[in-house]
Length: 110
Image (tube, rainbow, N blue to C red):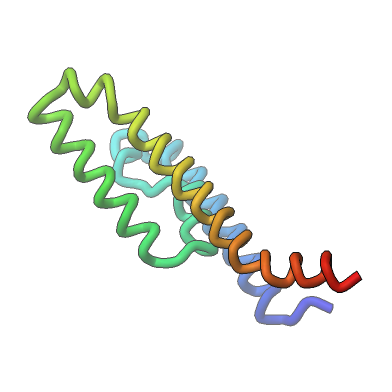
């Protein structure tokens, strides 16, 4: 059974998502100031430092676009993609290292 507080959070998250989706349609001139519903939704399950890292990456990308636009155009997407893929692979590797002793133990106990 779903607890009442969880239900409240689900309803609240749904309302925030709907409001953030409708606001840019209502305020077209200010839509660049309204946060992305997907970004806000992704912020809930992740740790705080992911937001800080995303902000620092965006700040670095902004600086690179201003100082070296050609380099930024050629490399920003590739560096960001590589960073995300590398972090994901490292997360899988860490989980495998954590689970390996248990799995090996089960395999050789039989």
